[in-house]
Length: 169
Length: 226
Image 1 (cartoon, chains in turn orange, red):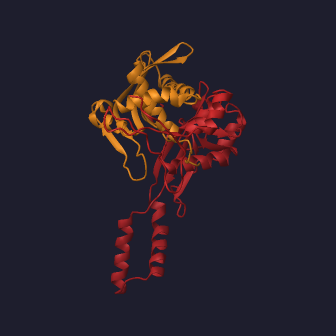
Image 2 (image 1 turned 90 degrees about the horizontal axis):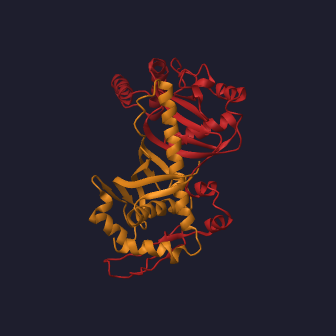
Image 3 (image 1 turned 60 degrees about the vertical axis):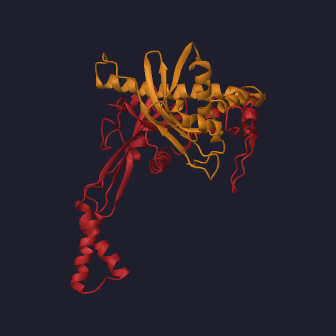
C-alpha cells in the first residue's frame, strides 16, 4: 500500500485552513443536512518543515495555537502537519489528532459511553458508530476546505485572506 | 467490547468482496483463519482472521461481526521470538567448551539447533488488530497505523478477497467526495501554496517555492495584502 500521495500537502493546507477559519469565523462549521460542528484546537500542533533544511516544529501543552512560537511559524509561512482537535456535534465531543499528509486519525477519544447503555453489545455498537461518525465529520470538514481551495480564484480570494491572517497572526 | 479510543487509518477497498452478510464472506474469512503456532517448532509468525467472539479463529459467526452496517473484522498476529540473551549465553558456553570463538557457520548451526529445541516452548506474543469494514462506503477503518500492521492487513485482505486496499490519503479522499466536475478538474491541476514569509506584521514578502532537489513541486506563491 503506497503512502506516497503527491497531493499530501492538501492535508497540511487543510489543517492550516481550519485554524484560519476557526480564528476568523468562530469555529462553527455547517456540514449539511442541518448538522453543525464546533471545532477548536487542543494542546498539540506540529508544523511541517518548509523544505528539507528545516525541522518539524512541535508545540505541546496549554494552548499552543495561541503561543508566540505558533505565530512566528505562521509568519514564516509554515503549514500544520498534525494537530489535536476537539470536534463537537451536539453534546458529543471527540478528541483527535489529524495527520495531514495521510489523513490518519490518531489518538481518537470518543464521547463518554451512554450510561443508559444496558449491555456490552450496546456500548460496542455505540462506540463503532462514534468512530464512523468522526470519520464522516472529518471528511465533511475536508470537503468544505476543498470547495474553497479548488475555486479557480482561490489565490485571490480565500488564499489571500489566509496569507494576510498568517502574516499578521 | 469495541475500544473507546485509538488511532485509525482509512483505506478504500478497490475491487469487490462477497456480501459481508453472506456465507461466502464468512467462508473466505474461515479459509484464512488464524492458526495457532503454540506448539510449532519452525513457524515464528502466524497471521489470520478471528472474531471478537472467538479469538481462536475456529468459528465465524455473523452476529459477532455485524454492527449495524459496519463489519467488525479482527486480524490476529502471533509472533514467537527467542530471547537474544538466552542465545548469547548458549553461544558463549559453546565457545568456552570449544576453547575458541565459533565461526559464522558454527554460530548459525548452533542458533538453528537451539531454536528448534526452544521454539515449541516459547509462547507467542499476541496482537489483535481491529478493523471496521463499511461496505456502503467501500472503506475500512483500520485500527493500526504502523506500516507493518498496514502491510499485514493489506496482504491478508488481498489473500482472502482478491481485493486491494488503497490509503484514503488527501487525494483519494478528495476524489471520493464527489466534488463536481469543475473542482475535480481543478484537483488534477492543484499545486501547493507557498505561503509568504514575513518577519513582522507590517512587512510584505513573496514566499519562496518549496522544492526539493529530487522532486520539484510546483507551487503557487501568494503575496500579503496587509
